[in-house]
Image (cartoon, helix red, strand yellow):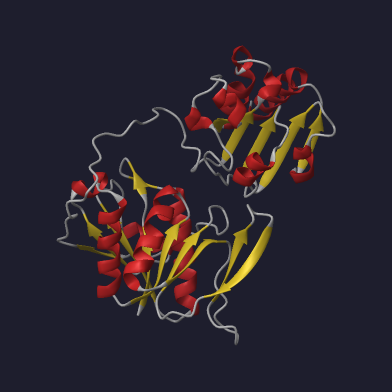
Length: 321
């Protein structure tokens, strides 16, 4: 028996969310007195043995580059097959786009119970059995869900468990596996070059209609630049064509969980909050003291963004020297 973690990667680089999932899986393995192992599909340009520092005992890689363009059906079949071979008791994914696509498919193949959006290690020491805490109602509440099946599948909410690095190395084995031909062929991928992916960013600076027009967006980009953060926007801004849709965060856009989220000129509609409320710290800048977003903020600044943001940007520059 073991814990199996799916390592998500992009352009050969392991994602931060995958490192969080590895640390989570390693901690769970320790609680269950078993080992944590991982599976990597496709080409990765990092030292896989070094992932032992996050608690892995073994990494299994199927390095066929065809996996990089395989669809979710083919990937899920491979992950489920490896999980069965290893007699994995728990399979863990990051709760990102890939994890959300793969986890239910793997769960069906393994006849496993699935809990999505977990935010804490499962409770395995009480009469309640294997119980997982997860977010519900767009992050407004938590539920404790018991998994009764022999095999369990979990997706881990970003930023809910830290990537903890210590010491150690993992054994690396190469699997002679190749993706099946699928009904869907990925013919190409459009990538945004030179930007920090929103789902991986530690700091996100976001703007709304309060900026009055795209010509004022330098307020957002300048602040994001000095903070080494990513730029985002609300849905109305994307719908109006001020910013591209790949920057739209919220329940109907990209759901994020950075360490710091700064919302400028965003009122805080429920759909927007549903996609950003997993941020560790939320700062809201708005001239309307009745803006709903202030109720969800850790820190709020009531003021005109055109006055507050430039002063904030200059102050951060001065601090950084």
